Image (tube, rainbow over all chains, first blue to last red):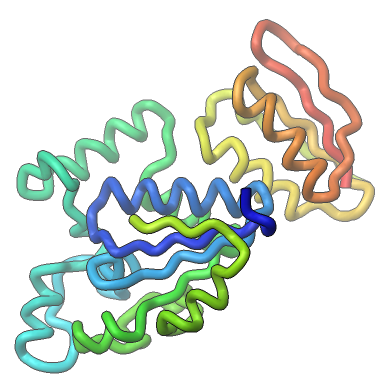
Length: 159
Length: 74
């Protein structure tokens, strides 16, 4: 059991279902009084791009093409049985019909409850992105040392 | 002092906690929040987490079947 009520999630995955898992944990933890951090790196950054669809963003031709293929939060694929992007739509419909919070509702709840969102400096550099390409709710751009400092004394999860 | 009400009997984890927390964050000192919640995880954990966050549980009673009434005061 950790000493502090603190949860830090490293979200490397850009998959829809892992995004749901991350923001379920983040919003739930924040709601019961945990200091909660989400650190987005590599494909996880797709969750917090300003451009939610497919867009040629970033510095350099290759990076722009890569970011177009990756897309933003509206283009997160399901980790299995994605069926060309149809499954996340079907899953969201299923969640709504079962009165379970959707990925977007969980994300918005996390923001409302003060979950700290951070982006990985190195991954942003590789993808040719800057903080301006990310939603304003992203608090700051961090490296490993700062993330370890922020997460010290709590529980850390890697998704 | 004002009284607020919230029904989370149709909600699922984590929105049970999320909705209570968002409503609690709006309370002023002396305000109360009446929450209708179901047995299981909400009943076990919502009152506990409210107390842990410095709120006072004034009442926790069964209303009907699995539904309970929780009154929290700031």
